[in-house]
Length: 500
Image (cartoon, rainbow, N blue to C red; front, side, top):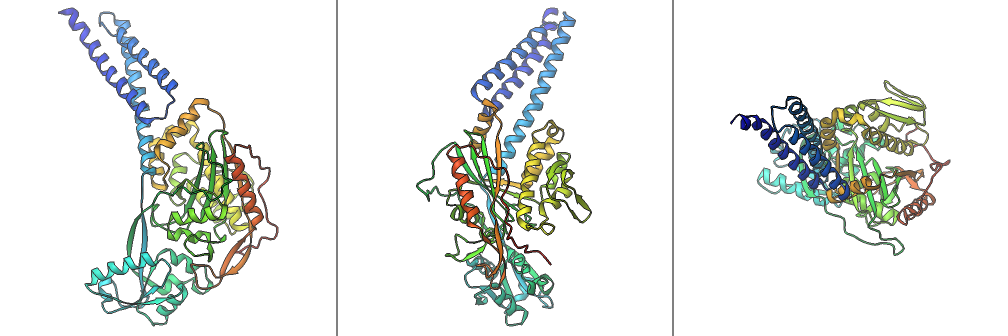
């Protein structure tokens, strides 16, 4: 009986350790991130340590042996529990940001500032202005929602363009207008309407929900090499205040061509004001940033048309929300190439330490540069690279939970988890470095009437020599050639659109 009592603590410790070890190995298998050989080796190592601890705690009579075994068991349990929680958190976050998303389009009902109406109920008998073709599907959805609330059909007048509709409201030709919230930013690009938000009042905002559909696989160029080791990803970024999965202008437009075999990533940046036909505009050019108003798929399709390539997935980030990631990482270090000052922040040439707010200001700024939005695009790439560099350091372990939460709040993608896991397995298998190169297409300033506007506005006419160069670089990366770019292209004839 005494011998049995002396074995009970060891049996309990061994039982607990066995459960923890089995649970951890199941978790490792579930993540699908470890290559088979590492999974087997890791599992064997963990089991051997657990068996050693179990043998040491068999009897309490051997106090030194039992104590050492208990300490080993506790340490192993703690390490596996700690690692397991991080693994689960990582997988959960990746599944969260890569799951199929509902896209929300906020549409506002606006009246003049001095209008007495305070709610939709107060617009009974009002005449509503709507756009004839632009964003018509969303507009019709909202008209139906308003009619449901008012209990009857509403009177509407169609307008060919955005400015005509707003002028009709301001000149009291119509009582209210219905339009996508993103059009407020579009209007503010025009001198005549820079103060538009002080001249009209938002009565209500309703939402249209749509599912972001998976991109169809199409080959636009028979010369494009089809290779399962190559991914083309659209990276979109915005400062929308409505939330990450809300439709709005895309201020960051990057195409990442990733060759997992040669370990090469090409990042091609396209300026937001690039004047190109949208996939929905029937050949009529618009600013690239406006494509985002109609959904992330329209932005992807538009870039596919421009570069004659297929885009597999999208990755979307909200620069307003990423301050939490930078702060959780303890700040980042960015190698700045152009000296400037903005607000309370000074950015000298060279390595600059930044917290979240300083990094956000750096990523947003464009007025301080001769080449405006082109330099801003380069700076945004630098910030993203700095975040990745910091995330690869041991510092990430200090605030891992808050970092994962921040990622959920400002990142979204449709890259399947299985593909992500496969990339991690490949990286762990050979642990080779990646060659990341950047290229920015350029253009020159012009004044045109974009598809989404009905008045002249600044646009950037593409320099198709740089566009063709980008196409060439993308093909080289897809075909497995090693690309080296010594200097990003510059355009001496570039006109600064933000010059006062």
